[in-house]
Length: 111
Image 1 (cartoon, rainbow, N blue to C red):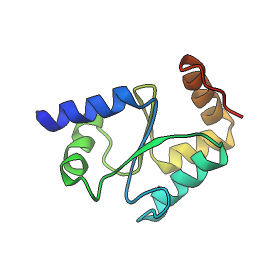
Image 2: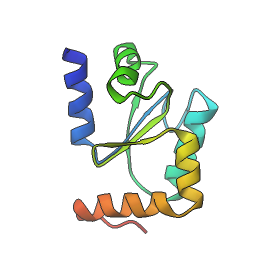
Image 3: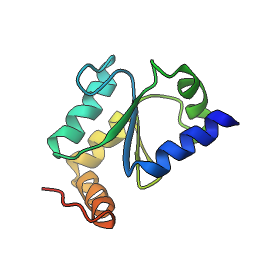
Image 4: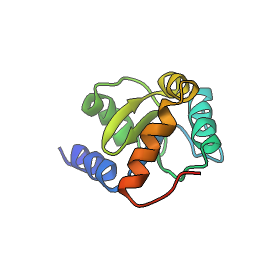
């Protein structure tokens, strides 16, 4: 149960959080690279957790989120989805709106 509390704390503390394989600078899979590229194109700052370096989170997050794969994008405490959903939302202009709403809550501005 300790890992679930850690995951919940990470999600609560980070308005935009990407659980991914690798880091934004060195993604370890194509799906994580796609997710980073999408967020970077929106010029948004986001936190990330490398699930390769955190095997306990890699094991427990899919159970917690009921989402079996990585990356997982969380915004304002809600699971948005993986890279394919991010890509779809991005192309329809919805991801930018979701992020903007989140940042407005935090008094930040999305360019």
